Length: 308
Image (tube, rainbow, N blue to C red; front, side, top):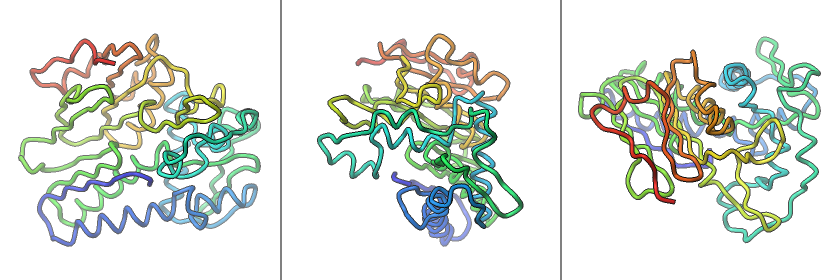
């Protein structure tokens, strides 16, 4: 999934950690757009045609549609053309090794999104799925969170007393922690040498979206991977970091992107009614949080700002 994986298993068989590794590798082979034989790549290549896919990929597509609904369209998994047009046309390790490369600026206008009125670009029929011709599905904004949810659930079903799966900072925890009193998660920001906050989570998920890490130089300009569905271009939001705490990691990942895209003026409107809480940092370094976020801080308080 183009990132590091960190797995903690409490109790159960020593083989559970290896099971987790195998499941993460399996989901990578199904969902990566950088692997030509993945189911996601084949769905995109066969756009307009139904094909049989695995239960895992069906669930991914269903959750992508759910994510669009709960985010009021701010999360859209059918933005692949716009992502590529922005320059994210290879793995980030390859991208980071380049000093800069040309992009097709006009291609950003050609994406087919879930906002379009011409029918849903993702269709599911029993065990078969289809990506509408002209659309491109990208699991990058939801896949890590969903993978963490699936693997943690499997570890508990197989006898673990507790588990944590962290995929590039999007993580799910459940059950007993190594300290037996809940899981403590540090929220890091690119401008701070120490965590902005330490949050305590008993059974839930934490996911972060930021414009400060996955960045590249293209056409003399810095670009990032967070595409705004309203424009088809990298977001110009005044927020550069959002962390969301939610019951499930796929939900936290979706909402982190939606909050960031909304900007500071209406930052937390989108999480109303979801049960999630969020922390955000704007381009001036100002730290803000939703009303219920303090419940995860214990006796600690958030800093007013982080140095930029």
